[in-house]
Image 1 (spheres, one colour):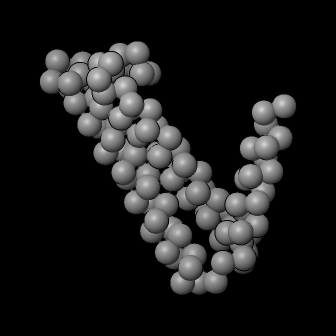
Image 2: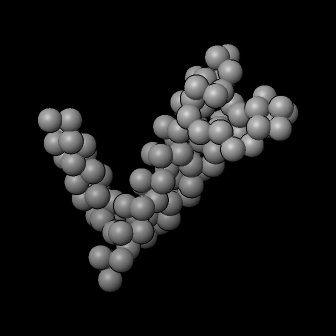
Length: 97
């Protein structure tokens, strides 16, 4: 039930990306990279207290201090979104040839 809207959104986004002209496609790639980098920076900022405790290999939001969890979850969302858009841009460039 939940996957149908996601597939529709992905198909719409793929259709939108595949119809972009060259300069708009390049700007989309740059913006998606910046979104993913912002997400990675938020993840780093959220996990900084753990790094100071020398806990480097922790997974999930439960290990992050309560005051930094909102940064962690926003970092995950932004990184995932930027990665998906970059993947769709790559896929559209492969299929466009």
